[in-house]
Amino acid sequence: MITQRHGLIPLILSILSPLFATRAADDYSLGTESTERAPGVPVGRVERFEFTESKVFPSTRRDCWIYVPAQYNGSKPAALMVFQDGHAYVSTNGQMRVPIVFDNLIHRGEMPGTVGLFVNPGHRGDGGPPGDGWGPRNNRSLEYDSLGDAYARFLIEELIPFVKERFKLNFSSDPNLHAICGMSSGGICAWTVAWERPDQFRKVLSHIGSFTNIRGGHVYPALIRKTERKPIRVFLQDGANDLNNLHGNWPLANQEMASALAFAGYDFRFEFGDGAHNGKHGGAILPDSLGWLWRLELAELPTPFTKDNLGGDEALSKVLPDGGKPDDWELVGEGYGFTDAACGDAEGNFFFADLPKGIIYRVGVNDSKAVAWLENGPRISGLKFGPDGQIYACVQGVGTNNVKKIVAIDPQTKQISDVATDVQPNDLIVSKAGWLYFTDTGAGAIVRVPISARGMSRPPPVAGGINKPNGIALSADQRQLVVSEYGGTNVWSFVIAADGSLHAGERYMELRTPVGKPDSGGDGMTTDAQSRCWITSHVGIQMFDATGRLGGVILKPSEKGAVSCAFAGPDRSYLYVCSSDKVYRRKTLTKGATIP
Image (cartoon, rainbow, N blue to C red; front, side, top):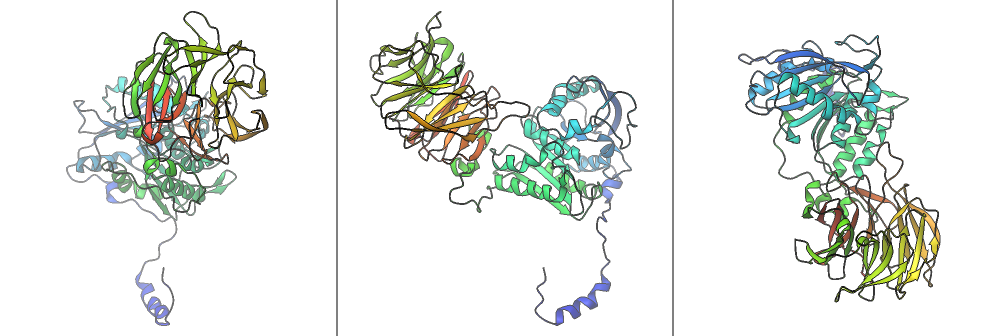
């Protein structure tokens, strides 16, 4: 930007301006890398086919094309790049001309040997448009604009296996060698596929992406800011003259995406020009875009751009080293029946139960392996230490019986005593005041028992009306009790009175739910020294600040989910998570709340 301070500047500009050609908005043209193959560049082959066998999108037919580079001979697995609205990208006389660009870049070694899969959206019934042009394909918006994993499953489970078999192709299994691209609704579709399945696709190229409210895609910038960074590299292109209609403002939406990606520390690039809703700008920079997308992986990811966070903003960058990444999970143990009842003690030792086998395991504060601590015991779904040094547990039965109860376990003798019977406990928490609270999921209730009780029958509930209560925890000062809903979306907060009763129950936090599910799966819960709540759920471990605001979602350690969690390890700064038949942990920048 020129700052006008001297009268000489306008004079100089008036003299020089005729020497420069004026460029109109949206005036982009293709370079020779897109219009012609350099001398000696071998030509890849393109074949067209039809796909009609989808079960994810039943009764649809679609035209597709496959590009195979001339260098491919099957001896080495090829990279894969999928293009939505395939007709617009596969044409060699349109705005994109991918086969020519691929031939040039692959020959020069600026991208790996890559098979291109060009996919048109599906059409249901008769009367679909010709395969080579734009037209009203009636399943396009459903497939491209919808959130969730449907289109990813269509590609991963149906179309790609079909292509591999039909064309006898060998694709690399490395997700870093799988890219996906699209324009407009195809652009947001490309992002959604990688967002839902980064285990399969980790490179995204979006042209004039529709990150607007066609089917809810306007939420992506917010999701990116409050979700642990996923291993995705993304190139965004848009223009100042893109659409502004009933669904939203495309230029603003893409700028919001770029801002969110910077905030979360993604490896991304945003090219914002003056183009309209077309492929001119994207086509003009396609060779550069692909070269950037396929460059070597970064040794270190960008630092999250969080300088504008207020002091009380509890972003993931505040509690996870470098903002976190999925590879930060460490495997602690595996091969169990089903793990649950995550629990840490005051020294940082970690305990958990193999529920169906009746075994409690212990991981020492400085150890990396789990050792059986109690064998041939009851089936346990919840464990917590009390102020008296006893371990309290929710029992789901012993041996072949299914008698449920609350028990106390002496850590020294391993002797087990009944605390409460005729109960239906799921999980529990114990206060330093000597009260034990447990969730009765079926009854939608919280039940209170004094830890001094022995054999107490049918203790009465102290709160109810909760949609399948599951996880339960105390604030760091133990003045509030919080409970997660497995069957709903709320986390309830109650004030604890001096006599241990609960008052002033509020739906204090709202759990994020997966697309298409009415429930969050709010499960196990723990709190840290700053009263943040860490709650396992269908989408991952959700972290809330002490005022009930979502700080972010930490990705699950495995697709088998996250069941329960607790802080333990050195300085009690590691978050341990039970995940089906495995247990994981990861380092955090906080530590667990004080154990009674």
